[in-house]
Structures are given as structure tokens and as C-alpha cells.
Image 1: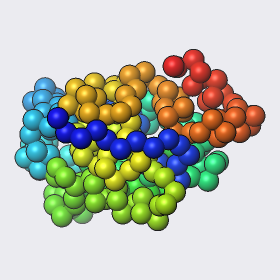
Image 2: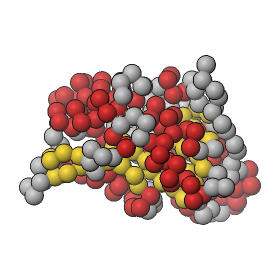
Image 3: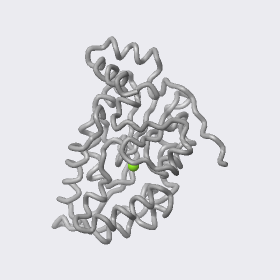
Image 4: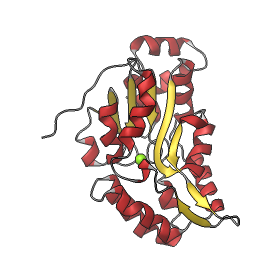
Length: 247
Ligand SMILES: [Mg+2]
């Protein structure tokens, strides 16, 4: 048995989210797949459950699909359309209490960044894999040096993000094994299984959320004192009410 993950309660100074199947219901790469969706989705699922290393599927999926710039930008819209309930409200509450909010994603930056920006997350707090396009917008590869395109790549990225927040605390929320790998870099890891329930992740996690609503994270990410402050604030009271309904 692996050692249990460390866990320390809120408050946190920095909260890091995965994107696909966490902030949004979709897996962006699967949405690019068109008629090959079954083949691509099967590869994604095998990578996110730890059956295949991410690098074994990352370039292969993109080579099969060769998504052009317009297709990747459409995924940004789909991320937003299918954002989990209370994604923007949760980010707003975290920001209102002065916390840093970051996204660390193996998705394509050109899709993840506009979505995150729409949720109120600063551009320089979005970490994802850049795609390359030629002058006509045709697919021309991806940033093969990005650690986020391979297994074991999230921990150093998350460590770098949370380092300035320490000795304040940091939390990470995600659904995949690549998120679980980074759990040691933070003080609390929450497995978000509201979209995809992956036993390889949920069996290891100290906290598992199975409600498909990000309001269900509130009591795991905010201290009781912070929840009281939010409940008294007309801008955030609805989130706290939703949190009570979701548990
Ligand atoms: Mg994910």
C-alpha cells in the first residue's frame, strides 16, 4: 500500500485546478476527434486512469487529429458551455478572499486559456500545452518540451506555482492520475469524480467529491471562518447556499 497522502485543512493561499473533467465536463481532445471519438476517448481514458503513460498517447492523438486553429478555438467555447455548475462562482469567491487561483492542464493552451480567463483566472496562472499552427491555421505540432504532455509532468509545475504561497497552504483539485501524481506538492488533494470516476485516483485520495457541481468543493477549500465571511457577502452567499445543498 502506498503511504496515505498528506492532508491539512484550509485556509489555503493558492488553489490549483485541473481543467478537463474538473472545471469543465469535457475532455477537450475528445471533442476534437469527430468520427474518431471512440478511438481517441479510449486512449484518453487509459492515460487518465494510469494504464498508459501520457506521453504514449499525447502526440499520437494530435497526430491522428491534426486539429486546426479554428477547431482548437471551438474547444474553448465548449469548455465554457459545459463548465461545471458554480465554476465561475467558486473562482470568484477564492479571488475575493485574496487567494491565487491557477489551472494546470495537459490540454491545449489555445483552448484552456480563454476558458480560464472567462472564469476570472489570470492568463499567467494558466499552465497548459501550446499547439503550433502554420500561417494558414493548419496544425503544425505541439510544444514537445512541455512537462504537461507527459506523465510525471504536473508535480514540478504545481510545485513551482505553489512555492511562493508557502508557508501558506495550497490545494489541488483534479480527476486524473496526472493530478494525483502532483498531490505531494500541495497540502490537500481533492479527487473530483463528479464527471469521471477513476478508481486509480479516488482510492488514493483523502477527499473525493462525486457531486457534479463545484459548489461541493466549498467546505474542502474554505475554512469555517471563510465560509461565514462568504455567506455574509451578497456576492457570494448563493455559492455557500449551493454548497449546503450539494453535501
Ligand atoms: Mg482532467
